[in-house]
Length: 379
Ligand code: FES
Ligand SMILES: [Fe+2]
Image (cartoon, rainbow, N blue to C red; front, side):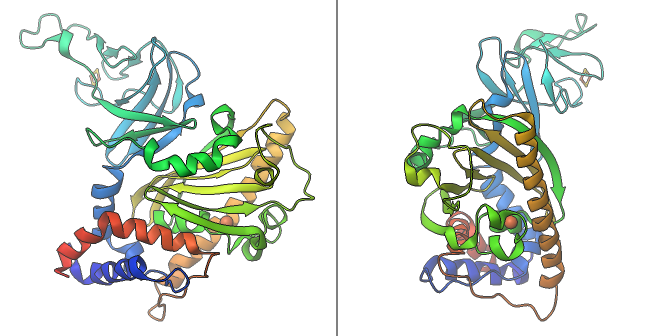
């Protein structure tokens, strides 16, 4: 641990915790670069909280699976013969090879090394040539299983044994997005990327509307300009803002349950630490966020669409806008890493309302890791 680096982080988070909504400041450099901070985040957030690993519709039938790495745990999400989704350890019980890779479907999870096979519920099916072993009970051998929760079509897992349920903490958010019916949308695009930035920089950028017009002047500004962004009150386990569409923009209307004002808003929400999403009537985006180091973040990025009127061409156009927008975000985040490393950088003020979500994020982190930071620095 390096108390010298994390002391300013603890102080800055404490200040964010008590600052007025229109008097917030951004974070010091060590917030994004100190390995001791990341260690605390992994221990208190990623290894403990509910972490989104993808969408339920990625597992359409018994045998469908996809893999995901959560901290040091290789996981496989799989739909069983009983149609239940389970998240299992993707590590072979023989000598530890990884079982599945990528996504696909099959009747068993088969280890490529010596071909041990496991049922879709995690029980060992077959361990070839092991019958003669006198100290191995095949009937009790199974893959460890982790607790899961499904919420509006998102699949969450926790590495903690008995976490408090997630849904009650998200009730006000669920009420805001209910009419969009994300659980009925279909994921038509998923990409796995690694960006050379800190995971919190990625979340901060995705979750503020202040940069939409200036940075994305040729892309997202035409769809979601900064002037139509409005921060909404955060909850214990979520925060976000509404990103408005210009009323005259031609768009697919979305679910008939949507009110007139809901049609014209995208609900940008974060369920920290691992999910950000933009929920809109026509189509929505989601990104599962996993740190792989202080300056590396793995992103599972998806787009999901409402209704049947989405042709392949229309989907491709939406994907293209997302790719061009992401390229602009990626470039500025890489530049920021250089800017923040300057000896002359110091934290700047947060735009009231337009960057209110940053303050929400810092307050969330203060609640979750503030006490541990203080314990380490003796403050
Ligand atoms: S490590 Fe999987 S069968 Fe040997
Ligand atoms: Fe952006």
